[in-house]
Structures are given as structure tokens and as C-alpha cells.
Image 1 (cartoon, rainbow, N blue to C red):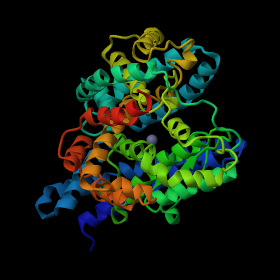
Image 2 (cartoon, rainbow, N blue to C red):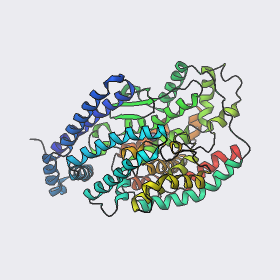
Image 3 (tube, rainbow, N blue to C red):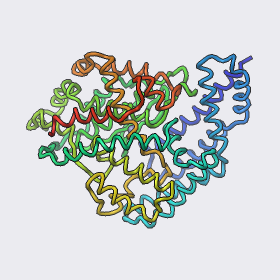
Image 4 (cartoon, helix red, strand yellow):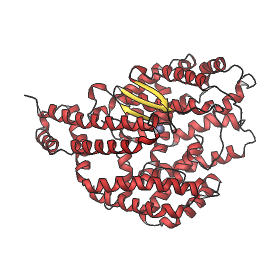
Length: 496
Ligand code: ZN
């Protein structure tokens, strides 16, 4: 007879595998789907979502959890973690009535198309009622989950377990205070990265170079692949990780850095314990930790001198004519270009944080009622001028630029910046614990860093909350000091 714990794990795995099928259908939609097949795919995805919801909310799952909680003295440490996290997931899933989930899904779908058209036509007024309804849905969802008095905290906690708006505020206030003066100094510096350095880099050769980089960083192509999509992403779990990138013949750095970013996500997923797949110990902590992995590889590792000591000769070998007139210093400056921009996704790793702080502040005000949806564009533009020194000439390049709010994804933006802070803190800890680490990189060897991340982050699964994990690995609380130090040390010598 199988134990209650084994039955629980079997049910969790069933729900997990149903979720991975949806993920694969979603990946295929963005990579392969013929143009007239979208309606059929939407039906397939809706059906899978229904099956997944039924599996995740099955009364038998609740019964098994209750039985195991009663007898928790008989469980070992790992089993207790699994039961505790699975209880959280089960309660969250069962507290949302099916009609509410369906209403939210319908509104998100309608809202996405209205947002895309509103952005195209620079017409915020058309999108505003849809945003209003999303805020209403978010408040109702928080109330259903028992967070009615703190709806924005719920939105944040959903992405980064253990995080609250107050904690994010404290971190961002300190970060902004240190970042704004650095940004002002860099923006005023006469030295600039050369724009338009790259022309005519054949996509096939770019693809070969990128695959070599991804392979050397440690991505296992035996259980994952990299394809092309409009917006790069990483999808999948366990033994099947699907990453995407994109190619621009006149900007090879775009493919290189988006691929490395997604590889960071892919390495995290591949490093989660396969034997625990489907249980909370085989899952990532949340968005912030995920983003810390992608940013660490993309920024701390791949924008560094040591990385390019190894890869620059290879890049030149792949593109001898295209790079013949580009000096080594020029190339390195282009890799670390700093330029204020209105658009978050185009921002360099310094300005990027200011884009996030702006969105976090405005979301908070929308939730606490001090900012009306109708006044959002004016507030956005004013804050953009203060933080970035740039005022959007239209809403398409301002408040309408991001897709997130069209899906009601509030509380998501802070994760990017939490990831940046965490990446820098992990980086200095790794440098301290692994002497000579960057000498490895200069030889094209990334195994010690990956092994350290595997042991300390990946193999922990969801054992810890976001902040607990940072403290566990680095020995101190999450702090923006490390990101500020990293940015100063990387960019001041280049530009100041
Ligand atoms: Zn990412």
C-alpha cells in the first residue's frame, strides 16, 4: 500500500506535468505556430488550464494534506517542507472560484488586444477602463485570498514569497539614493560607447557563436534547446527546457546577451533537483530569485573583462571582416554601453533599475488610491523626468510601453530589480568563496561558478523564501549596497 505521502507526491506530479504541457503549447505558440492556428491553440490552452486547475484543487489532495499535517511528527525534514509549501499552493488554488479565474482570463485576453491597439495608436484613454478593471480584479483576488487589507502586498508576495511593499520600499529607497548620483555622473561623462559599430553579421554565424557560449556556460543541450522568437524567453521544467533568442544582423550583442540572460534562467531550471520534480523541492523560489540567476550570468559574468578575454578572439574568428576595424576597447565599451532611454527593455543595467523604481512607485499609488487611473500618464511622465531625465513624447513610449499591466501582472516589476540586487550580492559572495574565479572565466571555464550556484541556490528548490535564501547563501540580509558597488566598480573606470 502506498503511503499518504507517496500519494500526495503522485498528485502533485500529475498537476505539475499538466502544467508542463501547457508550457510546451505556449512555447510552440511563440516559436512554431502557423498564423491561422491561434484559435485552436487558445482552445487547447483553455482545456489544459481547466485540467490543471482540477488537478491542483482536487479534494483528495486536500484530504491527503490534512492527514499528513495531523501526522507531521512522522515526516522527515524534506517531507515537511513539501507538505507546508503544497498546503500554501492548494489553499491559494482552492480559494479562487473557477468563475473568478475564468473572468480574469477573459479580461486579460481582451485587455491584451486593447492594450496592443492603444499602444499602436497612442491612445491611453482606450486602455484606461481595462486597467481599472484589472485593479478591481486584483483587489478582489487579494480579498479572496485573505489579503483584502493589503492587496498590493499580495501582488508582490505572489511573485516573491516573503516580500512586502514596505520591504521593497526600504530597499529601493536606498538603491535610488545611491544610483541617481552615479547615473547623473555617467550621463554627463563625455565618453560614450560608439553607436552603429556593427553591420552585417550573418545570422548563421551568430547562431553558432551563441550556441558555443550557451554550451560553455553549462547549459545541457541533451535536455533543452534554444530557438528563435520575437521576444526571448525560457520555458519548461526538469528534463526539457526551451529557451529562445532573436537575431539582428546589425546588432550581434542583442542575441548574445539575450541568450545568456535566458541561459541563466535555463541553468536554474536544469539545476533544480530532477528527482524532486513536481514537488515544491523541485521548483524555483519565485521571480526575483529566477531573475537573479539570469542577471548574474548576463551582467556580472558576461559583461566582465575575463569573460571577453576568452570570447573576444572567438568572436573575431567568427566575424573577421566585420570586426576588423573595431578596437578591443571599443568593443568592450559597446558591451557596457550606458545611455538613458525611455524604453525599459532597451535600458542598460544601470538605468534599468530606475525604470523599475518608477513602475513600483506608481503601482503602489494605484493600489493605495492616491493615484487615479486617469492621472497615470501625467504621473508617469513627471516621474520619468525626475528619475531618468527624459519625458516621454507620447504614451506609447511612456505608460503604454509594457505588456505587464494588460495581463493584470501587478507586483511583477519589482522582481527584476530584486533580482539585480540579489545577483550582485551573490556575485561578491561567490568571488569571496571561490578564489581565482575570474581566471576560470578567462579560460572559458564556468564550472566552479555553476557548481556553487547549483549547491547553494538551484538544489534548494523552494525550501526558503526569497529573503531567507539570500541570507542563507550570503550570510547577510538582501541589500542594494552590493549592486551599487558592482555598478561603480564596473562603469566608473570605463566612463569617468
Ligand atoms: Zn529574465
